[in-house]
Image (tube, rainbow, N blue to C red; front, side, top):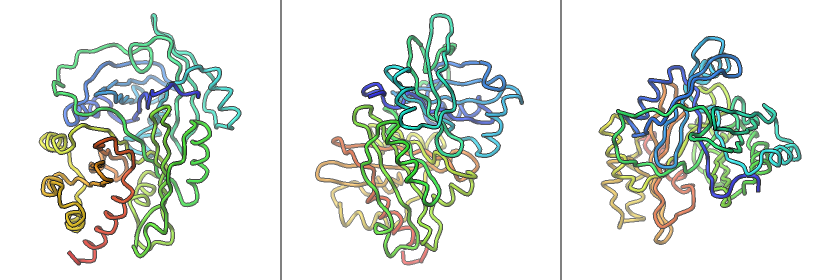
Length: 360
C-alpha cells in the first residue's frame, strides 16, 4: 500500500480571496485553532497559507499576496472560496511515483522537495476533476502539514475541541462522468468501491442523484462521488453545485464529532447556519424510531439513520460562502456505524418533495 496505514486525510486546502478573514471565521464559528502561517513563493506568485487544526482535522486556508499568483486568483474567480486539494501521506515517494505511473494518473508535478531549516518533505500532485488536486506527501521531518510554517499563538480560540477529525469528502461531477473518476480514485488511491445508489433508489421522486461510496480501511480515507440523474424533472443540489461552481469539484467536507446535538447548539450560538430539514422528515422517523430524542434532533436539523444499536447522526451547514456550493457536514457515529446515510438521503429527498407539494 502506498498510503501510510491509518493516516487518513493529512489536510484539506482551500483557495480563498481573503485568507485572514476566512481563517478568522473558522476559528470564531467552528472552534479551529490557528497553529501557524506560511508565506512563500508559489508556482506563479507569492501566497500566504494559514494552518488551522481541531482534533485530527487540518485545514489550510490559502490566498494570493500578489496578482502574479494567478493559479490562486483564477481558481477563486471561477469557483469562489472553495477546496482546491486534499493531501494524503505516503510511505515512499519514489514507490508512489511508480505506482501512479502504472495506474495512468494525470500528473500535475514531478517529485518536488520542500526544505525549510530542519524540515523536509517530498510530494507529487495529480489531477482531480476540473480544477482540483490530490497531493501525495512523504514527510521526512516537519512540525506542520508542510515544511515552512511559522508557529503562532492563537489568542482567539479557547474552545474545547469539538471536532475529532475528517470523516469524508464528497464531490459532484457531471452526468456519465462518475465512472471515470470512480476508476481513477480506486486505482490510484487503492480505495474500495463500497456502494452505488441511483435511479432505482429514487423511483417515483421528481429529483435524485447517483451516489458512489469509496473507502480504505487501511488508510482511513472515505470518498463520495455524486452525479445528477438527467431523467429527473426537478434539479437536485448536485445540479445546483455544478451550475454555480462552474464545473465539477469537492461539494462538501464532513467532520466527525463526539456529541452532535451539543456541537450544533454551540455552533448556532456562534452564528453558524444549518440547512433546514422538512417537518415531514421528522414525522417519518418518529414513527420508525420513537425511542430517539426527535424533538432535540428537529431543533438541531439533524438527520439520523439506525442499524440495530448503531446510529448515524448528520447535519449540514448552509454554504459557507456566497455561492450555493461548498458546505460542511458534521457527523456522529454511534457504536462504530460505518455507513454514509444513504437511507437518510432518500428520506430527505422524499420529505422535500412533500414540503414543496404542500402536503405537510
